Length: 78
Image 1 (tube, rainbow, N blue to C red):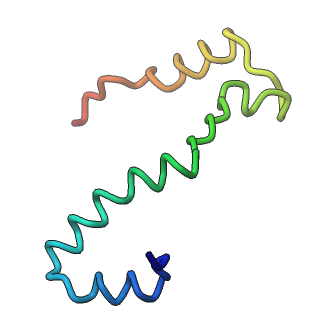
Image 2 (cartoon, rainbow, N blue to C red):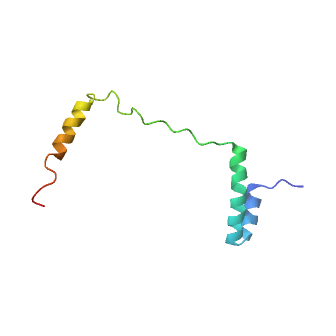
Image 3 (tube, one colour):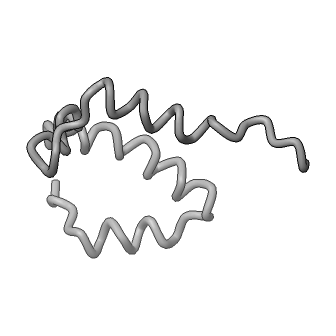
């Protein structure tokens, strides 16, 4: 039996109707991914991303910003 080449497989695939092409691809893709053994890279945590950049923000600074932000709420002119 001859080993199929990329071009011969593509030629055979082109002869199929579009819905059959999709069926072949959807069946082949999981097998290919499995054989490649690719696993998604673990995501890097964003915790502490801004740590050390600029002045540190304390609870007092946050409280002061909240008081300033909410001091005119609710407004009477609305």
